[in-house]
Length: 249
Length: 245
Ligand SMILES: Nc1ncnc2c1ncn2[C@@H]1O[C@H](COP(=O)(O)OP(=O)(O)OP(=O)(O)O)[C@@H](O)[C@H]1O
Ligand SMILES: [Mg+2]
Image (tube, rainbow over all chains, first blue to last red):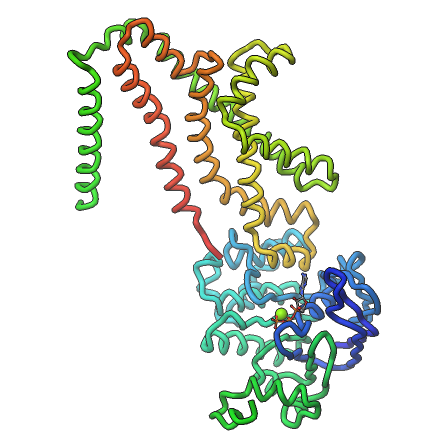
């Protein structure tokens, strides 16, 4: 993906949440956004998705100039998976996917069925295809959301903490599914607290604090952070690797 | 099996209590003859109650929708109009509204049919509650579902048609059935505006025959026959449609 963000400013209730943020990356496949709660990761992701208007600056994604009010066609090319409540709760997994393909993309059911079934198979969801969202586990539900996002053959998929409401086993399930995407060479931006995952899958890492980018670069920044903020952050999230970091808290 | 037995026992105790109360009221003998004589009038009243409640409910469903849409409207006047209506309704007893509606408002607009003044009054009353049912059902749809629809490129119409509406329908069915029970019960208050509905016909026969307790037995039974199935329907709908995300 090619991403060019210039002097971005976003306010909620007159309060600046993102201020003067710039980011430029090219030829990146998996970008991982990390940072403490409230640092503005979700906000930035929604802005990149063209879901919300912003006060100043510009966002360019793969050559699209993203402006919320003019982004209808752009959004159709981008997949978005939220933390939870993604699936339409009155429709089965299969119909959730079909609704989008039929109503928005005007595809014939018979024509797309084989592809959809293949995707469901690939993500281990075939036996759950006929179930309603509340009849499957949180992990299955998140994987189904990923399949639905994939079904429109997006240019880019945005994932906002897709595993934060899941237990470790389900988290592993979903992250394995995301890894499948990476192996398929699909571009995505993922907001995650799973540093281990970011380390093994992401080829670019952006660390945010208070609406600003503090540090960015390849996986190396997780091994050898430069800024005191990132050092402190990693110290806090990596306390479970046997307890060796406990003292640095 | 055990459940059924417990249910039968509870019902039996209730009936015994009911009979005990009735007996102590009916000093000597039970005499339903006056009610037999007027059974056509009474039956008529009972059907009027059903008809008035049905008509009122159908109108209330629209009144509620209009009030809800006004509330969501971009025009502040409509928003306040809707909120003021609801505040007055929530804050005033239905009897008072019924009396005013009958003696003054019906008069001012030249509506003389007691049936229609009654039905419209009920519709405006119940409609205020139904507006909030719509509001609750739409608000129950998680923000991520709206955002997802926007992301996928659903138009505003498609979002409402394929995402919001089907979820709202299942969300409002149980409370709407509940409101129908409310409407039937509230329609009894229209007796105050001399509408010839169920309670009023019974009261008339009571005053002719002086057989008061018998009248109350008939009136409670008559209302329960209408409301119990509805209450059971609400329970069933709640169980059946209760899918959480
Ligand atoms: N719709 C909104 N209205 C007002 N303030 C908001 C809104 N959304 C986010 N904020 C504020 O913006 C700031 C950044 O929020 P954001 O959700 O982007 O953080 P985050 O990094 O995603 O945090 P988390 O890890 O907890 O999800 C927070 O202070 C939050 O309170
Ligand atoms: Mg967030």
